[in-house]
Length: 277
Image 1 (cartoon, one colour):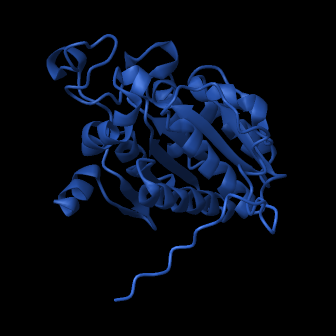
Image 2 (cartoon, helix red, strand yellow):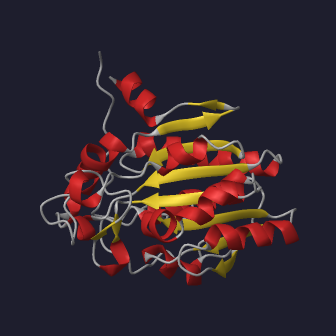
């Protein structure tokens, strides 16, 4: 097989044609690409995907977000989407009110695992049980990142956090909550999925999940939910470059990715894990 000819650009003379940007650096709905989240954080990637899908669906002017309390809250000043700031854990209830008053809008929540599964577990469960036509997006890194890496309800057994230095212990701390399974099992939930941002392939799959969840809402299908596993090297006390691998091996081994409810068919996390062998 003949190797392709490698193109080498000369650098001793000015280029014949000026360089030009061929694509946008960030989504149109992101006012500024700069943020103050820690290096290696996976939340900016997840938020970018969400904004891209909102724009692709033509909902830039009709989308309304209910934002929880966490590191991601810092993004509210640079998102070109109508937003309502909720109290800790209360974003699903706020989103419910917004959707009932503005049924034509694409209404979503943006929450972390501490906000949704600790502070406001009852909020999201009742919202799903009622089949409210909103989409809840969970950024799950297994820690309260904003307060320094404390254990949350999704922290997996053995995971080291700021207040579980020796690792989460079932006998002392209890077991992690697989929130996707809880919500998928409720009659009001039309679509539920769990994605991740560890690599390009996973990012693409997560993007498809977000699109399907929003499309479910726009079609009047009921409650939809997308959980996105994100890196938090600072809260995990590891080097930045170790983030994707740690996420995949630690959180990803328990919070297994895949679609949990589609067209009324529920697939549990245990079944997803079994399929992967």
